Length: 379
Image (cartoon, rainbow, N blue to C red):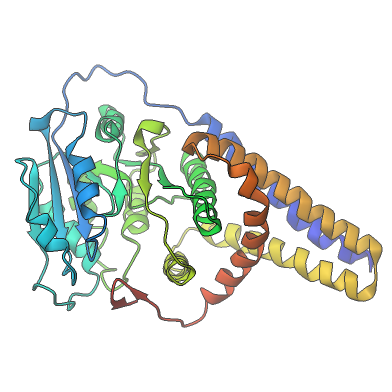
């Protein structure tokens, strides 16, 4: 029986070491150093939009208000066969920096992998040396382009991953998403810095146009509905392992809307989890697996301790639960300070409790042949 005590302890110990590892590399991320370059490149902001009538105007307005020379950037929106009034709203925008395109036939959802094709179509018609991408429901800060472009003063940099935060309101689902984004954002940034794994968010990316065209990252995965971000970053990592940076500056944080209901939330997370099984990096398989097993071991052995009336087992697993929550709290302290999430401490423990079961459930569902929908398409 005593050997059982070591299982949740071992899993939790390794988990805490991982948290320390991520925090160490998070703190090592530095802004780009000074260079001799004195010229600003032309930048193309490329956005693929589908059924975004509620948010598209605010997104484009924020993109057009960049603190960057007006003659050195353009905003390209490629309508991905929207079935609502997105395209009609786009037609009302009058700005010399704005370019509107349409992918395929109007309101005909006949193109597989069309978000990737919309991005590729926009980039192929872009004038910019540097491509910046965001999602159609994001709000970009006025110094976003300036912050992202500064990294490209160093010739070795090919791609810059930027931070993405959740717009806040006082409800549990919103704070759950905000803390999930902030924690994962820190971990992904630290992973890039340490090179243990390469993950990013398509809602905030910048890269050199010629690198995108050279790598042709979407060539063999247009049939996969999502993953335009991870397929690109992994393709660039293969040829330019030192060419990827994270923009650790609050002036680059893009805010996106939280999903409004649990059904939409789980559909989104299942879509994200599904693409992870296609990644070849060993770390993207064993790290989530270890964390999943750590969560399972604590719950299983806690229940087992209660059934067997083993007080020692109950105390050990309860202590492990508290310790990994404490590790998560320390990580969120740094993450929420960077993302400027207010009152997060109040919501942390209910979010942490729910997240323990959510992570186990998503892990199980991601390996089942479940189909879902995304903006009116089956994926």
